[in-house]
Amino acid sequence: MKVMLYTQYGPPEVLRLAEIPQPAPRNREVLVRVHATTVTIGDTIMRSLNIPVPGWQKVLARFYLGWNQPKRPILGMELAGVIEAVGGKVTRFQPGDAIFASTFAVNFGGYAEYKCLPEKGVLALKPVSLTFEEAAAAPGAGMTALHCLKKGRIQPGQRVLIYGASGAVGTNAVQLAAHHFGADVTGVCSTANLELVKSLGACRVIDYTREDFTQRDERYDVIFDAVGKLSPAQKKRARVLAGSFLNVHADSDGGNKREHLLRLKEIIEAGQLKPAIDRVYPFEQIVEAHRYVEQGHKKGNVVITVVDSNQD
Ligand SMILES: NC(=O)c1ccc[n+]([C@@H]2O[C@H](COP(=O)([O-])OP(=O)(O)OC[C@H]3O[C@@H](n4cnc5c(N)ncnc54)[C@H](OP(=O)(O)O)[C@@H]3O)[C@@H](O)[C@H]2O)c1
Image 1 (tube, helix red, strand yellow):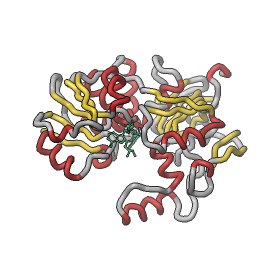
Image 2 (cartoon, helix red, strand yellow):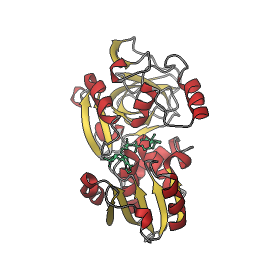
Image 3 (spheres, helix red, strand yellow):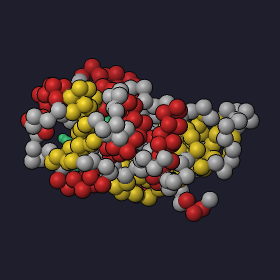
Image 4 (cartoon, helix red, strand yellow):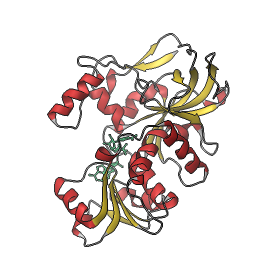
């Protein structure tokens, strides 16, 4: 099968197309034919080893990722596809099922034609309303935004501000806050993304290139920094302005669970959430996709088409 491998850290060009044997599912695994996966900022960080954390955390991250070279040479933390085969003891899925999944806990692996997943892993039947491209973009940022916002215990009509509203987590957070929790949402983003953020459900938008929202004297029930880019001074002020202040870096741990993916699927099927897609690249152009994503300005998600959906 074709895969996109990286065996050394470095620029996008370290990713290279290769052929490796197709895996076979174990007793309690399913074999997925991958239709689509994503390139996230996390993929670019793992590829480059350019980890934006303090020194001691860098050391821990490097142990996790592989000290001298990557321990997990196939990136891709989420995917959507069709189950091709199942192991002898699988009861939850059958060949032909369209699924979407997080591969975060199973050594990643979305940049491949096939991936084996434990049937009890973070996978679920694909929401019928989504294409494979949209479904591939749903798990990571969707579960993260939902998990963080739940901590705010948002009630209908409450005032919620989403900072970094145009990113993958941010575009999910705006929709979830507005359409799932029923909040009155203010989105903070740059000029080019104001219309997008409004279209996702924000009642008000603030352009961070022109105004620092923390200098306004407006109060919120919840402020969520969905991109983790507020300065220490802005965070301090946000804590004063909000009943509850949430941060994607501090509050996202524990979000990657099967029950959260199932909840996300229900929310998507209720019409309250649809992943925002910026660009779709063919598999062979993952290097270009990494170049684009690591600039840090994507709008929502960047998707990779692995297998043409019409081939099934
Ligand atoms: N995606 C996931 O599944 C996931 C899961 C867990 C944790 N995280 C973490 O959460 C953080 C956000 O991830 P993401 O995937 O949402 O990132 P992303 O999609 O790559 O974020 C890019 C967006 O952030 C905006 N942005 C950049 N600098 C900004 C600033 N100073 N103020 C406001 N907006 C700014 C950009 O808009 P402009 O054009 O205005 O710059 C762009 O739209 C990352 O640290 C990531 O590691 C992500």
